[in-house]
Amino acid sequence: MAGESCVPRSLFGGAISTAFPARFQDVSNIREVPDHQEVFVDPDRDESLIFELLDLKSEVDDAGSAIWFLRDIANEQDAGDNMVVEHSGTLELPGLRLGEAPAVARTSVGQLAVSKGRQGREAQNIVRVTLPGKHTSQECSNRCSYHRI
Picture (tube, rainbow, N blue to C red):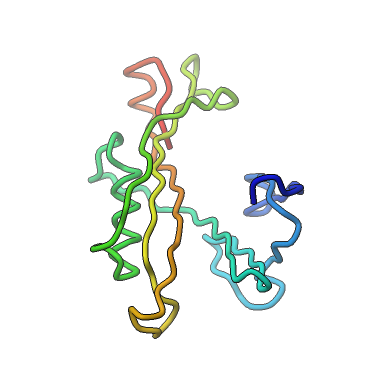
């Protein structure tokens, strides 16, 4: 996708916006998509973009939340044995604030080998997953700084 011309897209009824190549088609025009997901595909390249809202997990520490969700997705896809974490870090979100404190997000990027549907391991595809974790107002107010979502 690097170097491709991107177009703006609204997600979740306009609550979030992003940009990605126009070649990706909205799957909700073809089939039903759960309310917590936005799914786009390019059938010519067998590529998908899936945006998913994750539930807050109060039992998971903020600092490890993005990695926790990455591992959860890997386990759910029966890919826990072959997950490779490429990156994990913190990003300031200058456009978001909690009082005087800027918001921050925790992120992780990893690769998983997964099969579609009922296909076996011999049909695995390498999938790149980019995740933000959760944020809490308490951490922001305690540190008076930002924290990754």
